[in-house]
Length: 154
Image 1: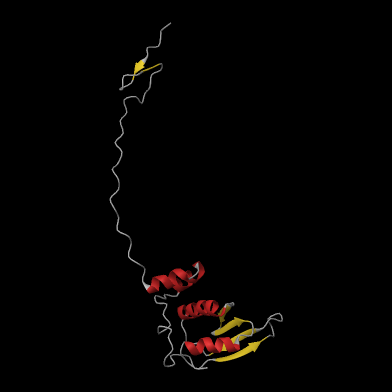
Image 2: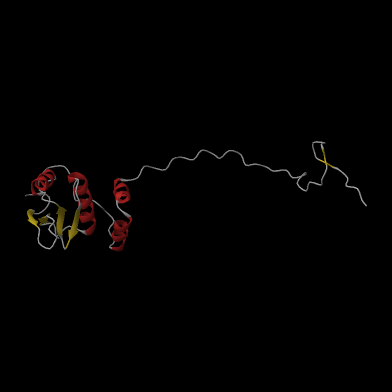
């Protein structure tokens, strides 16, 4: 029988087995160069990022590029049509909803943005259906205040 010869490593140590990686040298990469931080997102990009995934798909499908409501949201001259408020219980399973009429001329992106702002501002659910804004609950007074602050005629 043959006897195993001990292999020597580059450092001169003797090992009882033949190490195939003993002569392998690795060159590790140097530390990466500092990368400049990305520029801050534009206001339109921030609004778009706040939308849900489904809303972004809808916005892309209909070719909406801008999410502005036509102003900066500050009070001033009325920029929208006259809005009127009504409540409805029929056909809603006994639940009360506030209907806001007069927003039919808004584009899809503006409707989505307004709906999101109303939900946050009033703390309740809201959605557009056939150009009519539906807000959960009897929110007539609070909704009038919200629209008046944004320059709509009530």
